[in-house]
Image 1 (spheres, rainbow, N blue to C red):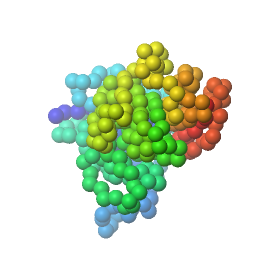
Image 2 (spheres, rainbow, N blue to C red):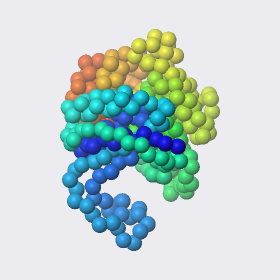
Image 3 (cartoon, one colour):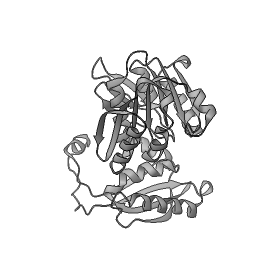
Image 4 (cartoon, rainbow, N blue to C red):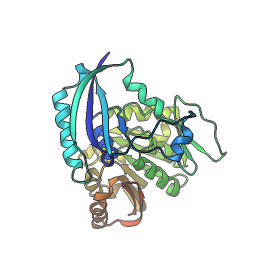
Length: 317
């Protein structure tokens, strides 16, 4: 099968945010080329005796992604990427900031990324494992979450997802009711339920994500009584607001700051008095804006956690 290969020439500092925003326009996986030196942890994971000679790091990076010619409009995709680069330029160095395309052929580009998705510890007692990998628990206390994200966002490896999982690990109590806005693969709802929550309501604007979340619930042996899944936009859909329910113990939203800001203005009825509002997907340059929005809407900020350039707010109603 032939594929259109899109190549973005950029700066290493832009790669994380670029990959996150490409996911938002439907890119199903990326390939990154850079000259960053291997960490000691990376070296330990490589089963080779002689490492490749290091290349001088010039901070440039190439981000590749692939699409089927019959299922995309290359000109439209290039315009979307150019818009993303202009947006990122406000926060990060983007290097050349150019995009080119070529044609290539491979039997299974869509699934090759699975080679790099391995079991990892997302929080003290939470291990994320892809469904196709074997894993033996290191500790009896380990909570194992199995995930096949399909084309939905949410392997758990992104910093924003880790921050949310760690917050849930700290704050979920037995029997809690949780509302997960922008659920993606369902990973946060699954984490909350496995941590002892009594029920999770998960919502995503993408119907495909809701389908993937349902499959992951089943993989993790969660019963239909433990969760509800809905597709739609909680900010504007009045019928969905009713379905989402009121008075949850915890609302968690791992989206983007530009969505969290308007969401914060309508989310209070869905949280019980004294309940928690956990938000991530927030690039550090948007931290003050989100903070101001939370305070303006009457939330008390309990903590702000950081991981690389991302932050997570834990706030109380």
